[in-house]
Length: 283
Ligand SMILES: [Zn+2]
Image (cartoon, rainbow, N blue to C red; front, top):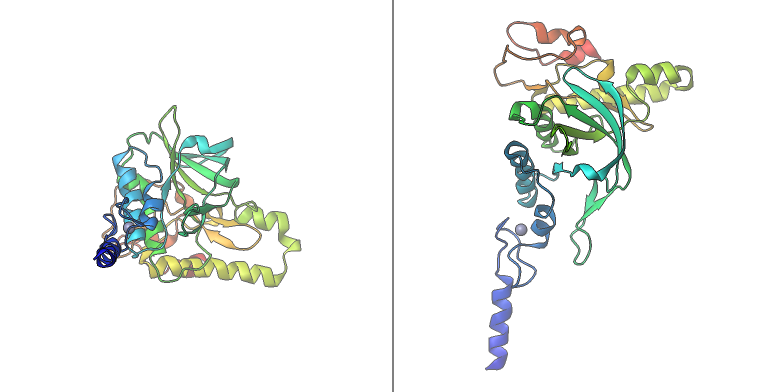
């Protein structure tokens, strides 16, 4: 009798489904969630509805298996050596060190940290002016980036977005991106032109083209592609600043703000709406 009771207990333990993803089983009867959901949902939220909606959406998609990456809200005290470097159209740009750093990979082995990070990572913080009460529209670039990530395979040619932090005094929101140590296209070429072989130049051009292909495959048009939005590190070139990028299939909104008009891709000025092959003109 006791043996059969024990066998039944084991069966019922196996059948406890995680309440979050409803896919995996819980680690034991004392937990309501599986190891994966526990690791993902224990991360920070901002308390801001708009931001947390976006972050939560990426987490839910991750644990249910439909996407394989998440965006994060990171507390401001995670950043040190914050240094102002530039002013953009509607933002200020800072360089900083992110102490814990961005996600390197996910590990769901028992008794280990679920999220393995690249510690002391150099980042750019893009502080959005007067963004205390941020709207979903102002976070367009994060949403566009996430849409591009939904391609089956993407190249290395798109600048990453890690998520958002909030400056505690002004409550302004700051978008977190990598700091590319070799700068933008103009700086890269003017500092290194004679030291860069043709092989490397063609490799970097190929990174830019593949990045554009990824953007267009996601049915997005960049709409602000210029030398200041293409960044370099020692391995690749990256297309950055998806701030005014748009879906190619949605209707255009004429009441938009533009950061740097002189550099707008010519296709964006056609009244009938942007063309999707700005890549041809820009590259
Ligand atoms: Zn789960």
